[in-house]
Amino acid sequence: MALDPREVRGLAIVARGNQIRRIDASTYKVKSQNGNGWYTVRKIGGKWTCTCPDFTYRRVKCKHIYAVEFSLILREKVEALRAGEREAEWPLKLACKWCGSENVIKKGFRYNKSGRVQVYKCKDCGRKFTMREDPFHKMKHKPEVITACLDLYFKGLSLRKIADHLKQFYGVEVSHVAIYYWVTKYVKLLSEFLDKLVPQLSGVFVADEMAVKVGGKWKWLWNLMDRDTRFWLVAMITEQREVGDARKVLEKAKAVAKAKPKVVVTDGLHAYREAVKRTFGSRRRGGPLHKRHIRWEGNIAPTNIVERLNSTVREREKVARTVERDDSPLIEGLRIYYNFVRPHTALNGHTPAEAAGIDLELDGNRWLQLILKAREGEGCDTEALSARGGESDHE
Image (cartoon, rainbow, N blue to C red; front, top):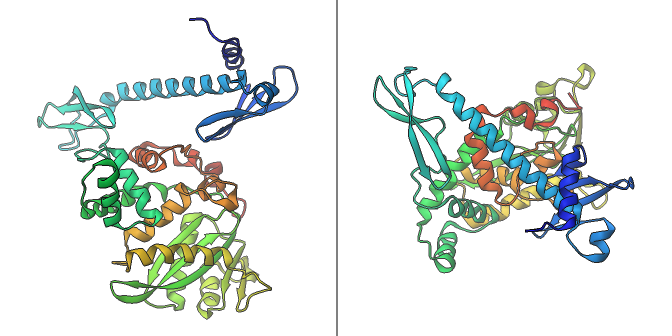
């Protein structure tokens, strides 16, 4: 079959090299072949668009779009080859996960909904195992069903409403108890992986606290986020609002950010004043500027961004009616959803994680891709995924 002339030119662009620049998962820059600068190729609503005259005026699939598509196909093939090379090297470095013996051989494959997985057998103890455990291994339902439930849950639906929705529209019968089990299991998996990533932040931390009912008892939920990236650093529940409680929140923020902030913005709670000094040091000893605001300035509260976050948490908490325990997957899962899954209008449609320089290249089903990346988290170069290897401007 003869190729479209634009398709041939797209192949030529890819063959030249250094003609395509990736901006994000759905935006690319392609160099003009006439020396007129660069054209922007962007995926909108599942379809590629381009700023070149050919697409703009003729509304045809231009050579720049073909070039981006060919580049993505080539990239997928290279990654598949690299994955195959790594898999071929595993037997040389393997030890049995049961007895520790290195007397291991390949023993076929296991086929499941996530694809083909190499199986190994230990010749000493006779037991079989895989190099990495599939996160959806032995799950009755497809990964797409599980991740859809996660997304609906953190978008605000109750467990029973999600179960009813699946039954009505897709004929899938699953209990609300199973959905809660999925939420608990995968939030824990994702939290362990994502907490290793180091965000590149603005250095202005904004903190606030709100009352929540935990197991029928009123407690305090502390939320702390970075001002410019909107990255939600800490969500912690305590029984009181004393200096020690505030210090726990600030220490956790320091551990996640891997750096001291330049400015800490809080409300007028007295516990913050002493906690900031003890955690980061006084202003004279290199500590951050602490801005305490008891009253609103004009029509805008200095802590307005975290106040808006509190409203988001409150909306979700009302559906759940109560948070069951201090380490509830509801709060931690909501933080993951806010940082890595939900696009933010104030960030031009990007997520806080993307704004903070954490490039996980998520597109489409973000929950599924996050889980699959978490599965490989032990062998993943987390510094490469973090902005400048975890270094930040405010350190």
